[in-house]
Length: 459
Image (cartoon, rainbow, N blue to C red; front, side, top):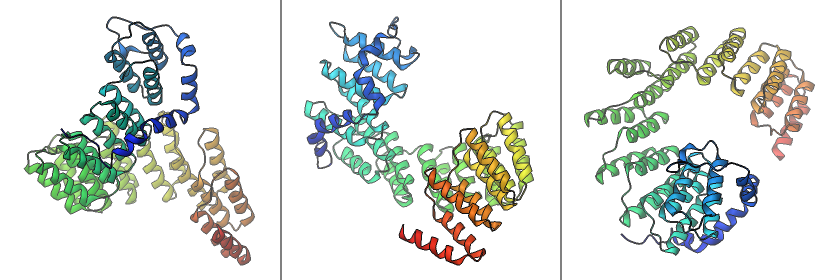
């Protein structure tokens, strides 16, 4: 297997030590405090041990840190395998920055990291959105003579894709293959997801073909990724062709496949095709899930078929599937747009009773509906309710309220809302300014409209 040193990797090798030290100095205050007071923190908690060191039995990260402190104080120290088990346990708790500090302390105290440890460290940097430092760890591995493996490079590819650095991920993938490393299906699917994330549908389809050309049989996950991307870009025919292809190849479509296609059909107003797919799901004993129902409820709401949407929600419940915030958002938005504000408020009350907290989107729909009905004081009450429930009004909330005042030619009050929005740290967007300018024009206050126009032009 060839050495993985190229124009892509070499900068990592050069900058390894410098970048990693920079990262340690830029850790969040909480992690920096952890590094400084590590010893005092660990003494505060009882040592958790047990037969075979049950690393998954930690109640919290402090238990793990206490065990770590005890391990590094032993002589001779436990093997790197034991340290790796502990690091992996902390990773499972999603305390990635703490793992970075643990690895740093291990090295300082003479516990040499192996390939598994370095892979854990790279994964933590990638999870923290610091892929550059992940590359630095790779450089350090090469410098120390630790040969990276498929997991090392797969982890970096995944990190790059998460940051939408798809071209770099593809370059690393090509180099990985060129040097004799064998990517697994997870790596292929990760890159497929990355390509679809940036909307490269053609490239995603070509990549799917390349998988087959290299002897990899794409699974249903791979097909679902591409079908979903095609549907979201309105390429329904291409998605259906791929759907037919996977069935011919003996790959069974699952609920995700059908959800992607039904979503695409509903958005493209292919209701008959969506119905056919639903019937096909039932025939194949594939149960509809919350995502399927939400797609259908949303489609019915957008068609103005509110009563049918409500019936669909009742059907969900009969099937043992409880509506979630997405379901209620669709219903509330539809009711508000139809001027059925009281019914929308009843839905929110039902939600709260069922333990589901309304979000800013629901409240914004209500604010907008009340303002359009001329009930400004009611809209203002909703904003107060939002704040009391810990939900911060956003630009949309304030713009809706401004529009309500503008509709009643109360431009002084509208301007106050604009000012309040700015004072609370929200930058007005083009819709906010357009609302105000339109209001001034309708109120025949053209000088103020022109003045505001010039103000935003200068910004």
